[in-house]
Image 1: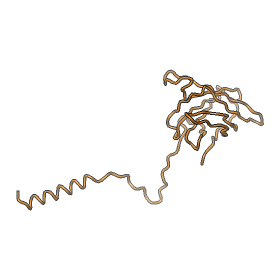
Image 2: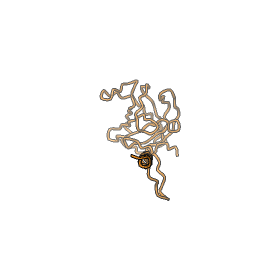
Image 3: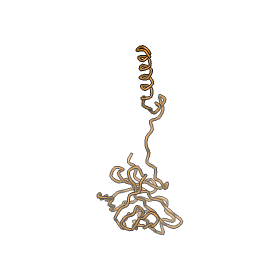
Image 4: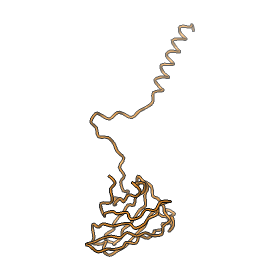
Length: 163
């Protein structure tokens, strides 16, 4: 093989390698298309209560038939459960001018390995939850990891949207 043939072959090889080294990129959205935004969605379809500007969340899920309100402690994007040490916490609800205290107790689950003192699920029961569809409340104190949150106001079923 002569020098010109080798030079041509080398140029061809460099061109092929350059074409293969192009990085794959996402297609550019068409002009005027809405921007995509990650939106946190409660995994059980419940009410989101944000803590610390959305660093953590509680998802509240009502079982009106049983008069039970479940509270799941979740991360910032409401994708991962966050186990906490606290064995219980309270929320003071206002219904038609009267105050009612909901005491949420830790729920152990052998299937997930969660125990009282290391769980992400809490439950409160009250007869008025069977008939009350909406109420304002204040969560008195909740410690998530090393941060204590106090006097967090929310509405059920609206939550406490940060936007």
